[in-house]
Amino acid sequence: MPTDQPTYLAVKPSRQFPFLSRHPWVHLSSLAHDGGDLESGQVVDLTGPDGQWIARGLVNPRSRLRLRLYTWDQEVSLDAGFIRNRIDQAIARRELIGAAAADGAQRIVFSESDGLSGLVVDRYADYLSVQITSGGLDHYREAILDHLQATLQPAGICLRIDEKTASHEGLTQTDQWVRGEQPGGPLLFRQNGLSWSVDLLGGQKTGTYLDQQANHAAAAHYLRGRRVLDVCCYAGGFGLVAAAAGAATVIGIDGSDKALATAAENAARNEITNIEFVKADCFDYLNQAANAGESFDAVVLDPPRFAGSRHQIEAALRAYQKLNAAAVDLLPPGGVLVTNSCSGRVSRSDFLNMLCNVARRRGRPITILESRGASPDHPISASCPETDYLKCMICEVGE
Image 1: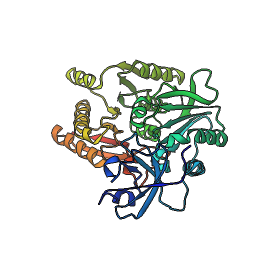
Image 2: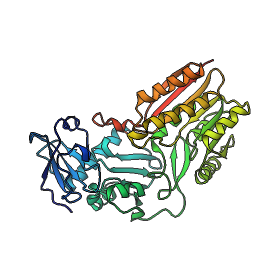
Image 3: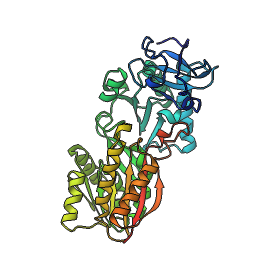
């Protein structure tokens, strides 16, 4: 474990303002000295170009995100006790939001939003899924896992470090059970009144997409009695909740055999019969449906992240525009469009402007009935706008 005695790194002139506003990410390009001679996980004090103390964080000389900041109080020590306290605060925050039922699922720690940049913890019924995305914070791995085990007493904890994160942060790619026991069969949890299965080691991110839980329920209200096309359906979230809530029929499309198999299993387990799943590329399916003269009363778009960096924003917006325009072509006047973006680099205003362009080019009004974000267990940090990453727009498309 690195020492908690801090050293110092200074920012370049005029680069201090985001950190004075408590943004936690200090990229290599903002630093006057690169810190390449420091030990990963070492405690570092960030100063302004004039030597003024700003904040304290953990350095990782193997990452371009060189320093992650955790406290703006110079009297606070950044050690294992600090990490444990932040985890306790995150758990208390979920009690304030409203803890999920014992057989439900909920995000317990949400990285920057809970003051623990680089740590995500999800609970699925009796099990925890932990994702570490910071090489500096990884030095507190055992303290984190021990505290989660002692505090929440799960039946088991799995740890996930994906290949991309491992490469960027100097870590070892990991998908393994690290505490307790692993489930004897499919891990089931309840959400929106339905039973779902999740593969904690092989599923997306920490298992599945808990951030859309509230949006699934909200969208289902608008989809009752309608013929729905659920594009990029993954495990069936939007489509299955809508089908159970009274949609006339639902077609879910996705390009992943594994996702579609999970979606079909979820439908069968919940005895939902007014839904079918089709393997297809989303763009190809929408174009072929339009060419065949098909129409739907509602279309749900929940594509994967199109922009992983700021250099991909323009390409992502073009992809969103193409996808949404194709969806609008399938909707009659009064049709419902539920369109989502999980690309944090694409701002809410960018996404709204994209919809404006679709409306203009298609010559049809798009009225936003609800502008939504992630479920409340994914809170937003006012100091880190990137945590407001999920956009969910429930719209009516006019004539």
